[in-house]
Image (cartoon, rainbow, N blue to C red):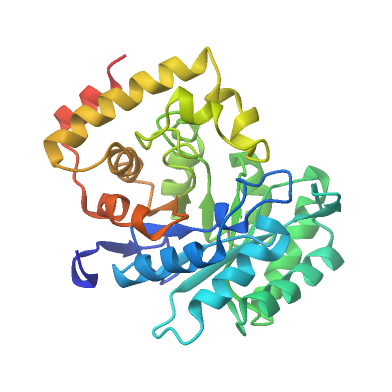
Length: 318
């Protein structure tokens, strides 16, 4: 695969032409905080970013809280001297609560401190897309979104969006300033976004990039009971109900169906899981996390993978 073959689409009304798969930088934040994925080698992270860019991926999604700033620093290192530079998306509202804990703030002064810190860590003059990470605390949503509108007006960020919002929360934000993008979780394991938020985003012309399309590695085909048992204690997935019984058996049965479809397309279960999210007409792009360069090639092909009605029916079969 080369750059000429990776499919792109418009991200809502932003004017940004994005590849249908983007680089997710949560796991490369490393360990030392409550939502870490265990120890991570920064050289592996940088090599993974470089491989994704080599294959044509043109956007990276990170957040200030990933590794308590470390993910953004790694992204900066990876992009030094890279031309053309990919779009860089990041998020605010989740902050260091001390002792590796994370707390939420949508207060104006906190967000302004966050954006300055993110600009510095990323080594950029302007952030391409700035997103409220979580709408918490809910009562401060208006203050937070008003601050985001200020940042856009001041030219510190080009576009503004939200993550993990429900329809009512998006409407409250829209009363203040246009919500340009939306980032919900969406996968075969977590399809709830199909009910309200994705149809709403499509009707409103809001760009959508979904996160965890492989359900944080559960649908890759590489996740077994033995591997889950051997995850380090500082990997948050070890405590997640999706990775434990009784849910685990159901999810591994889904993986088996994905693998059957993957064999027909000469690809991987993970790529099929990602492509499944991209077939929803509301979805512009999927955020895919990579920790090592060898993980990139088998998954970015999801951007070009066209699933047939028969494939979709087989995947859906209980």
